[in-house]
Image 1 (cartoon, helix red, strand yellow):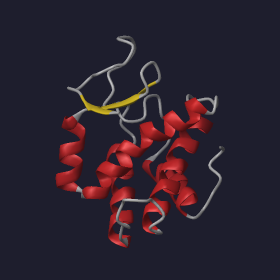
Image 2 (cartoon, helix red, strand yellow; image 1 turned 90 degrees about the vertical axis):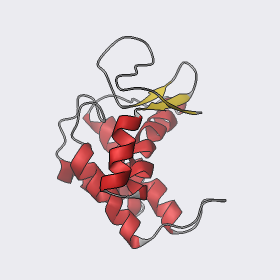
Image 3 (cartoon, one colour; image 1 turned 45 degrees about the vertical axis):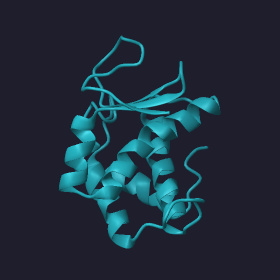
Image 4 (cartoon, helix red, strand yellow; image 1 turned 120 degrees about the horizontal axis):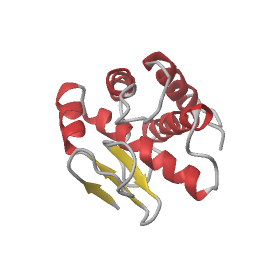
Length: 146
């Protein structure tokens, strides 16, 4: 389930305000339209897909019982988002049209522009370029720590 929530939605009612979040309690992904609408308008369609891919990658790690906090987990989350883009690019996702090379570029721009924000990747110390590198590893077929 995906829910649009106003800025600062927090699943538990505790912690910092975030714009993207996986809520383990009910299995939903929540997002702030105030992040996704400008990302779409300024970067493109796949910027939104990339940003929404981040909490979905957290959901995967949660379901597998893997850590979701810390530098290694963050790297794996961004890498997994790159893997998802690769599967879309290859046309391997049933019911989803393949994405173009330009849309893969949108992903890199979205990570550079928004990825360093605490509301997107809370507590992240990674630079935009480190985020793009993690995404690239996933796109090229990395295992992403899963």
